[in-house]
Image 1: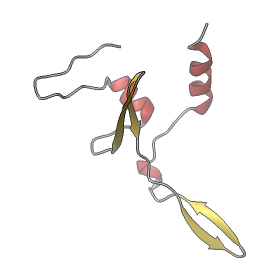
Image 2 (image 1 turned 120 degrees about the vertical axis):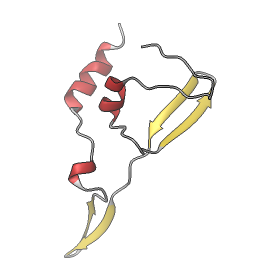
Image 3 (image 1 turned 30 degrees about the vertical axis):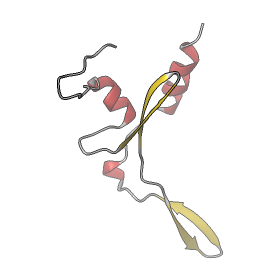
Length: 84
């Protein structure tokens, strides 16, 4: 997909990509640049560790309503099909 940069330096991320990546208004992203190009990564809130009995259990810090739904099998298949 192609997009353009406006006069203010903003780039529009196409809706299909935003939805697949779980990006919504107010989402935090990390932008890095290297010799290959520019990378944009969603910053997700990490889990917190809660002691349950004698074990530490990772619990999400974001409510289920605000977690992106992802089809992991589809993502894996899409990645496999990217390369000839």
